[in-house]
Length: 397
Image (tube, rainbow, N blue to C red; front, side, top):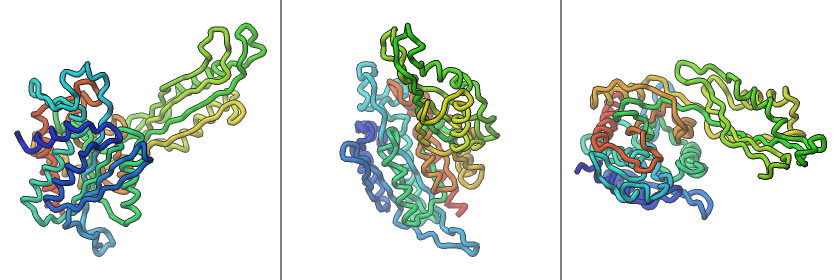
């Protein structure tokens, strides 16, 4: 059993369902301290949803001295990820207990196997091996881990990023261990993500008897023409790095449950996944304009609340992307695909304080599913890729 596999199994044995870290970060901090990291635990959130965050930096961590052009001469690489996992779902549907790491047919089963405890183990072991060979690296190395990525994400990575920014700590490169691969570790990495913005639209009517519509005002009927326009709208055409912006309804709630009552309100939950061709402000205005075109006035006929979950970010080919691509090819022979598809990640917060962010992890086919697993054959190559990235960045520094 390799060191990476052993550590992965130890992490999988911890039932760290959001926001409970279940001791994962303490386990990782012990490993990091042993190779020269200073570790700081940062807790955040209310008592009933307490989030644990870990900020760890190698003791050789240098203050960002400036070169002759005013730029940092000492670069910092941050390894980022989350120790929390989603709930297991019905335990009786699993082929083995979800928090008992189990091997079957060359696969390691357990909640978090792919998302993302394998990546965490690979990151730590890669750093152990790299520092054994390079005890005085030319780059700074740090870890940013949270137990609130799978949850609301209000008290996790975003809190640590704001704290680091207030302290004036400069981050240059970040690798997030999200499961980005498709069939084999390294075949796809994320060099950006779309933005996400949700809306809750409440259209107001007048409740009444369905046999006397002249005495009522049906909010579903009021909304229908505008809803049809929104469904058919082309928001943008995307670009070379992002697919077109999408608008999707996730929930519609209206009616009392009775078949003879016109409802008083209808509530629509929807979400934008948007490219860099659109902005939150522009999309919001276009929704408002569509509602107005169909006779709906804000405040009088409807209320609309917005939540911007994250802005889009993009890391173009350069130092970090090139290092990751080269490491993947050297280890696996794969020429990786750059992608910005998929859901959101904590990369959206880190990108606000770090100019180059890339996500790289194992295949994601079973994330959040019953019987989540990772192929054992994918584990050691991931650690080796991470180690090669460290070597490439250190050589280039």
